[in-house]
Length: 307
Image 1: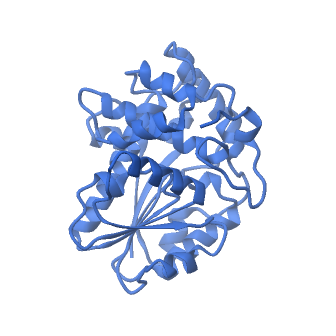
Image 2 (image 1 turned 30 degrees about the vertical axis):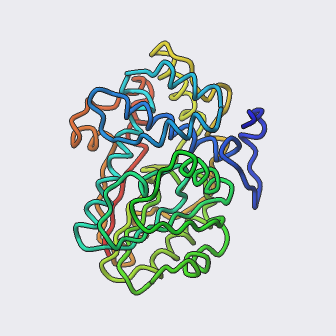
């Protein structure tokens, strides 16, 4: 696959699209690289052997170099992604323990849960994302003879469009309890699209449904987020695999509802956890950031809601 220049990574427009090595797609590739690194640890929180396959197939040199010499510093984004992935893995396992047999992974990207988790018999998983992203994942899985462990329904649609119609056409049953996940998604949606996302999930969710989402605990300062990322790699003596790419340029910074409050106001029971909470839960040291940016450690909030 080709390597993109910086402009292709960072320019956002209304109705923009991407493949796995451009714009928002490259962030999914980066997350896959971080999942692969977590999997290579002596005591990994997760096992995602598909992640390395995605990075190798994409051919993006920065991430391939990262896997060739993986860092072992849990303070880096690699450690954060390990915690986050484990949290969402546990969410789905809790949901199916409660008898839920229908799941929707919103903005699935290179999430390989449909292929690597031991889903109960009779489970259907809907993966929603851009057409080129889903096509890439399907091609890599087919080339490596890896089959999904649940009934997989790929739904190629932009979340800014009428995705409920698309997921319904793929067989989604709104009368069944559903486990929904929105991992690493919200900053890439305009505020109106985020609010619409929650409205649509609420409408489609039968009683007993569950939702897990990663949100910002406070409105982020994107310049400081970028500075924090650069500082963490510099302190560890490693090259930032995103290079000069500023991922925060892919974010939207307009007004939007607070997800926890929005869901609570509509009758969902909501619980939250910080990154430090996850580290304690999974036996990892507290996540560190430069002292002068200590408030950034509480930026990400992990929510689980039940209807």
